[in-house]
Image 1 (tube, rainbow, N blue to C red):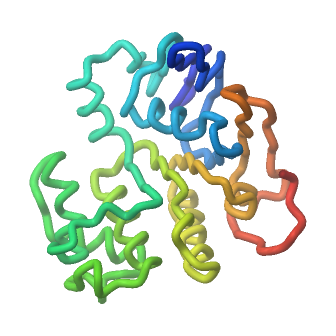
Image 2 (cartoon, rainbow, N blue to C red; image 1 turned 90 degrees about the horizontal axis):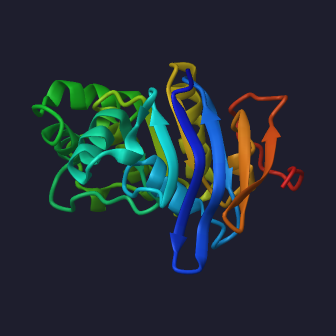
Length: 234
């Protein structure tokens, strides 16, 4: 059984089909990228996979459970328990330290535990920055705090929306290398991106156009390492 499965998903706004009969599967421990031009349906798909929205038609199965039929309250619980979210905008609380921002995610899940939060920061290489406020951290460091926050509740899926969109090349490589380590640990990664260099490091890339899956690219030379050059398949 696949960890995630979309079956004939539609998202319709009036006459606009933001998603049009989309079906896909993601296996446990897989690293998948989702690409497409602006307006292709990437954000809509992320919101549905992340239990932040429901499809107009179709099924969304997580661990075999059809979450598309759940109430908003249950969707919140599923998102809290199953999915770690990473956004392009960091959404850190300005007056909380790095470790406190990580602990905030624990608060909504169980009980804050500073030791666990510190361990999460250690995994992303930021234990020595734990007491710093967001304004004292670089953009790359802030994004790594977001990764630690996403990891703290041991989600089954890490869902990242343009996670390198606000980063320079050096920090982009650091974050992608961190994803590589998470994948090695067995984490399931779904990365929504417009950047072909970020997309092509995944095991598979799904390309959306006009709300439809137009292409699937399998990375036969998968290493999880980013390659900065002009040669990519997109």
